[in-house]
Image (tube, rainbow, N blue to C red; front, side, top):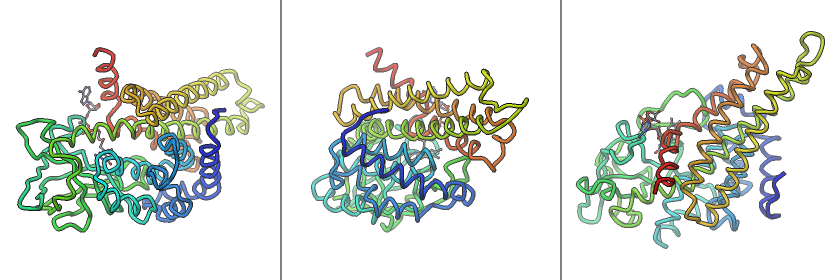
Length: 376
Ligand SMILES: Cc1cc2nc3c(=O)[nH]c(=O)nc-3n(C[C@H](O)[C@H](O)[C@H](O)COP(=O)(O)OP(=O)(O)OC[C@H]3O[C@@H](n4cnc5c(N)ncnc54)[C@H](O)[C@@H]3O)c2cc1C
């Protein structure tokens, strides 16, 4: 069992209790209806969990704190864990590059949970190659005019505040990308298509249409041309959180498989007595523990703002998400045909685990990040 500071242990225990008692009973329904769970958002808000990524949350090791909370929530409902994860990701550019005035305006309502935020980088033709973005921002007087389409944006339909990345000077490549704080009520800001998804169905994923969207000049984040750097740094901080999500759902798969194997009788005895099943459970447990260890290491590096963060965060996200996919697939295997049925949670775990290999940089991109660091 990992030992953390008393503050972190208390946070983890609080979230674990909340997850087991309130979120777990809602998880299947959230998946089935595909509706954003406002009740869970309010629960997290009431208990101050949405303040954890912010200085207002008062937690010294805030990155580890976010990771522990996300792991506990993801263990019972990955969709619900995105409420905190996306709040942390969406706010990171403001925390990294915001002026005092921007932080004073935006952080308190985000920390209290009164407002939600999101992160808008991806476009239809700019996924892994984020620098290929077509969205533009042009300064006219004291207003930036944004035009373009962001897609696959988590929590787009429920967020109030967005960190949006746009090209201010295409000739400069990645150095021509700029970050902006955009509010949902700004003229020219619209929500487009809402996606239907394999998993994390309670986390809305949608397009943002920017049609001559008017953003006040004071909402420029950092300086013009710093957007790509800000986005990459935000992802470095967020990848341990995705790894935590993966560890949480892997643990769920393991717990399910252990319990099921002790209850299911075939050939006159619980299948847990079969060595073939025991070996599967042992591999699932060993992989989950290894993923957890690397994830906590990455979270600690985020808290130290270590120069190793990029490398280890990518490694943690890569490893934990691959483990989550393997373990949740094996959880279904342990339960045989029953595991394939929606009456049991294992198939939801597998569908939810899959996204952790894709978003915030696919695992191919994590390998590129790792290799780039190795070969420097
Ligand atoms: C549910 C969901 C939520 C999301 N939430 C957000 C969000 O909140 N904000 C946001 O900005 N984005 C979000 N995304 C976008 C996500 O980060 C991208 O989908 C992801 O980065 C991959 O981009 P892509 O889908 O365009 O795939 P592509 O880039 O088209 O990749 C297709 C395939 O090619 C591979 N590939 C691409 N380039 C390379 C390479 N150089 N070497 C090897 N293989 C390569 C990829 O690994 C992948 O297997 C979300 C996506 C999903 C599905």
